[in-house]
Image (cartoon, rainbow, N blue to C red; front, side, top):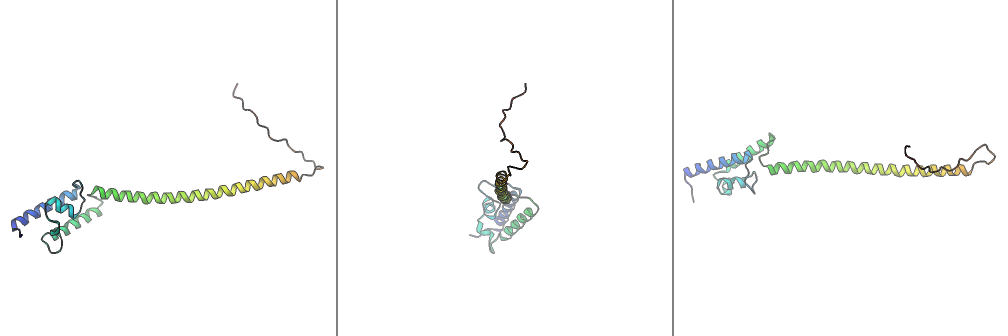
Length: 153
């Protein structure tokens, strides 16, 4: 069914009005800032926006204005902006987690090495105590005693 020139002008006016609303961020529930939602908001068949159909130039205009708005830092679709923000946050958290894992591995290795050194030093102390010449002027100290801590008087 063909439409008259007056109907086409009227449709283009509705499409442009819907385009302006979408680009301002007035996204209807369940919609996005896309051609499908534009067609639905204007009450026009979506197929009319493709190929050599009558409103293909309006789809191109809408997509260019949307890209320009995004380049300027404006996100008319809050869901898309939220998705991008969350993706960036996920990437940041993944990087942070990788750095934390690397630090944990390094600290675990350091702990293992420190314990091995302490054990070796303890063994060396025990060996030296056992090898002390009884005729030498060396006095073995008594074992450390546990003292009870008494509070202030």
